[in-house]
Amino acid sequence: MTKKQRTLEIIERLKQEYPDSDCTLDYDQAWKLLVSVRLAAQCTDVRVNVVVEELYKIFPDINALAEASAEDIERIVRPCGLGKSKARDINACMKMLRDEYGGKVPDDFKKLLALPGVGRKSANLIMGDVFGKPAIVTDTHCIRLVNRMGLVDGIREPAKVEKELWKLVPPEEGSSFCHRLVDHGRAVCTARTSPYCDKCCLRDICKKVGV
Image (cartoon, rainbow, N blue to C red; front, side, top):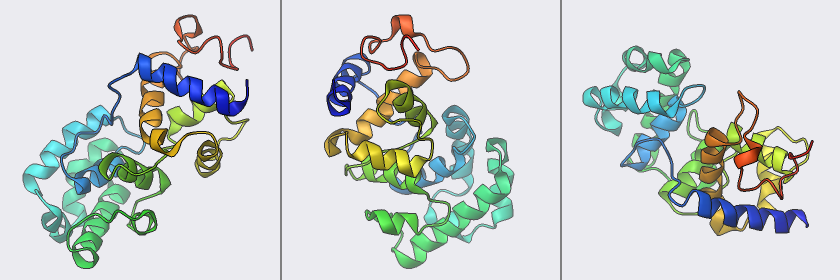
């Protein structure tokens, strides 16, 4: 079985296993996903979803966050960790959206990358989940799983993993595939315990099994 064949088979099996996989960050507008994904660095999505509820009570829109001081934002987002840098990035990002994009999140990958605090992972998440465009989000689950499965070979750098996966994953499948990798990584192919290979839907085609 080639890597391409294995990839397509993994995609189909994960579709069956996790038909409703989606982003676990709560948002109803694109700018809110930008805020949440910045807060999610080294923090759980569950905690972020709680913290942003309080944040939006006080700063309900882009203008409010742009006009706020970074210190006021930090006081609210501190439970997510790295409060100072996250608050500074959120404040600067909202100012840029207000001043350069008329309060709208751009649907261009390079323009997203130019926003403060936005890296390739965040930009891909926005492109896929908000705009429905081809995207591959190489978070820690994705990187761990595709290495174990043998889709990439010992590559840990997110940008390099992304580049390799673009060769294997059909563009229209990338975003949902990465969400399913997150669900599978949390439920079966875990990081902090040994993976539960005995109950894995991929055990007969995964390179990890038997190693």
